[in-house]
Length: 521
Image 1 (cartoon, rainbow, N blue to C red):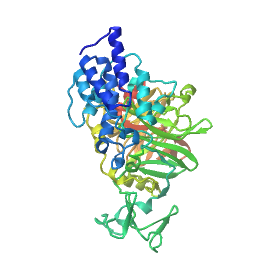
Image 2 (tube, one colour):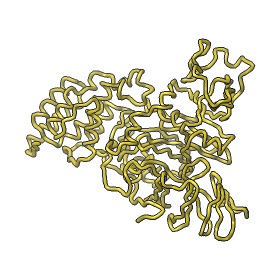
Image 3 (cartoon, rainbow, N blue to C red):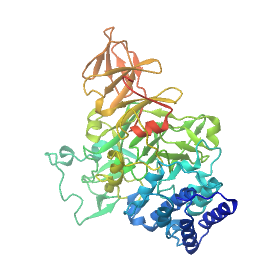
Image 4 (cartoon, helix red, strand yellow):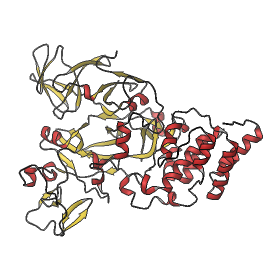
């Protein structure tokens, strides 16, 4: 495509892309038509940015996220007629090589753009900040954080923002026995739930769960965390994926399908302030202690992506943080060289978790949000596509040759300085045996725990031999596998080494060095 460099030609291009910022859709259309005529590739970054806003705003009922809000009106700033750029796709086709015309052409353009090296016109950073401050104000305000450790051209909008992708703050937890759907607990005795459960005429819908209208007054209700629950109000099935954590020997489980439309839960468990953050594109649940020095932070999702991973922010300073690394990437905390302490989180099924932790508490789905959480119980369709299709490229992610296929499900442990991560393909970790390894110069043992998830511990003296839920070391000491430590029969404890789940590309793109264990050949 043509590329102009004369001063007068550059001045016209800058004037035209500036016209894309005015609040006038007719002016947008005129500028786009002229940009298509000129055909200068340097305007591709500008066109990609407005394409995203145009497509999401124009097709909220199909592309809005979270999906549970698609039946609602989009945020006012996306509804406004002037937040449209008629002809932007045609302009892209005139300026660049691809010719995408499917329903998801905007996704195809994003994937293509993520693999390109396009030098934008001078002043692009200021232009992008003005675009976002004007048309996506909740994102623009956060994106304007300084200092920054990333290039503004590399951060991508993920079709959501803090105004409608709200963190789940300080939710209640209830006894697992009270909310488990299984034959014994439901009184069926055969492990099957009633097909018409929740369909009776005398029930009313609350947060996707059927409740009797006289709930709380019946003798057959049981009191759970201050809420009266009917015996039919059970929502956790054994096969549901949950994220489990233990604090002071108390187990807690958060269903993935409840966290999905929030992507973030700020919770305080046994007095410990934690953030359970979830990148839906990376399929990465990570738990952080949200204390930095003497401050307790409250985290949310910016709606932005960097190298395919979500960007978090803290409400206290509006600094930006990497979800996967737990480090600041822009704002006040960047200068402090802060890093969040990661806590172990287990990704398993409710049945497996509950078998290992019979007294586990579970997140109460009566969160205060009017969400039909059950939408995500069996349907994470668009994201399942990203998790499983090697050809589906995350927005902003540059593909590269890695030591594993991009979509390999891995568990990673970082070095003390956070620059190196050692990952273990989940499917390869032995179900009954163990791996021994070395992390940061220290011995480690990698196992499948009682929930069938990966767990890494400091290793006792080798050689090691596993027998069920115990490990025998070279000195004859037997170590019992527990959630937070290996507990020896001589009273000693070896701590669990916290790790992170996710797809391999999230590790490859976020860390300086990625090693594949237990042997990095």
